[in-house]
Length: 252
Image (cartoon, helix red, strand yellow):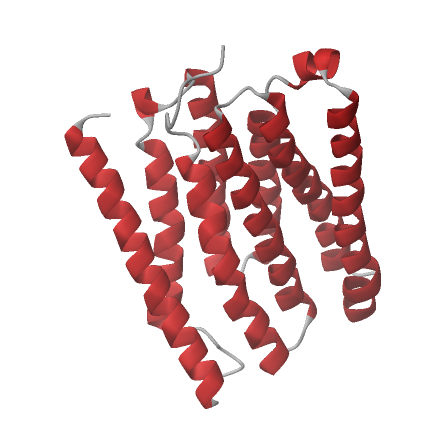
């Protein structure tokens, strides 16, 4: 990576950190002082800076270029973040159902990207890895399935939005499973794989909280869910974006 490019990446990360501190402080100041408007809990500045962080994360990915650890990996990550940027545009204009479908496409690209090399992994994986594969799948299924059965279905009923959330949760769950499998598959350097695993875990939690937003009426509980969402969504965007850079030696 050239010195100029490194400076740009570091500057973008500092901008993200600054914006994150700003909207987190403003969100929770409103909540704790009781001044939040439950009908519109995010003031325009906060909403704009949150969307800016989403686009900055996409820019970080688009800048990877020759500094990725694998050319094909970079292309797949670019496709995922292009879909995220488009999905966030739909969500900004409250076109939620289409936005959710676009995010499902983003997770398809994440699944392909993070699960790359899975066939060869299957052929040589140990009993220990097989156990972790099964346990992680069961844990994700329990969390997502439990949330759908015990919270979202009672709150939303058998509505179109519920069924969309149900389908989306399948993509989200497989995406999270593939992210943690990446640590064991060995296609990407270990540091990159851990960024993926931690980042997609944050993404998973943030998307569950977005579902809470869709399933509840304006009020203190919904507002709290919205504010907490960005505590997880920000690292959920930035860490996988950074995982595309060459952070260590490429595995043989």
